[in-house]
Image (tube, rainbow, N blue to C red; front, side, top):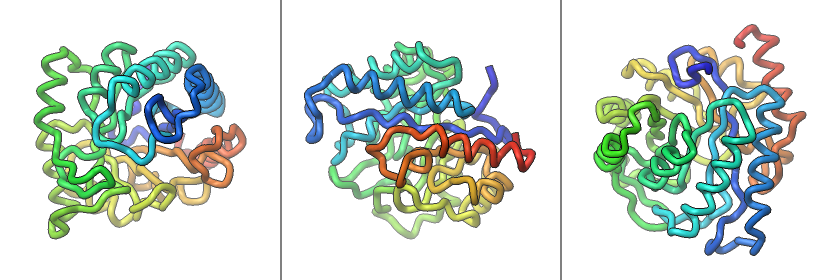
Length: 266
């Protein structure tokens, strides 16, 4: 299987945004629809040619920092169903920042990586202050024998505000790398907002691990993004009107992947 988390991999990772999970504000009451829609989106992404998938509880806004038992159970089942349905690598994002739940789910479904939004920074979020989890994450990973599960760490993540704004993006990047991250994710400030290319360049200059563009990548800017970034994570960009609640569009996804091929990146 292709190693999609590596320098110069040029991999596109598509997001499977699960519908609102049980106990969250927007949960519809339909448990099976969560699984069905996740699998459908995953199959669409694979058919359109993406290199990997992240399964995330994106429908659970407003987020809490940690998941409750019902959320963990639902995300586990949805991730397992996705893993069974596709042949490409998958990762887990237990949003907003539950690295232990992410690792536990990854272990049970044999996922390849997890995404950790707040790894080394301290941020203010809708659920309050979220502190770094690098130590907890790396110790939990070791205790579970998950040496092969990679950690994709956001730095100065979107949706949140740095409590210590004087910390540079370079310092956050160096801290993430030093504390065990296998790759760094750089984003714009909001969902769908283009990741500033100069920010990716700044991070690339100070770390020797892959740097991934985490927001706003599309068919028009992917050439420029991939001239610097080692990969991209795309969610709303694969959906009609950029709306999170919409299903993945095969046409939009294929357009981005075709743009990569036409430019000789893949």
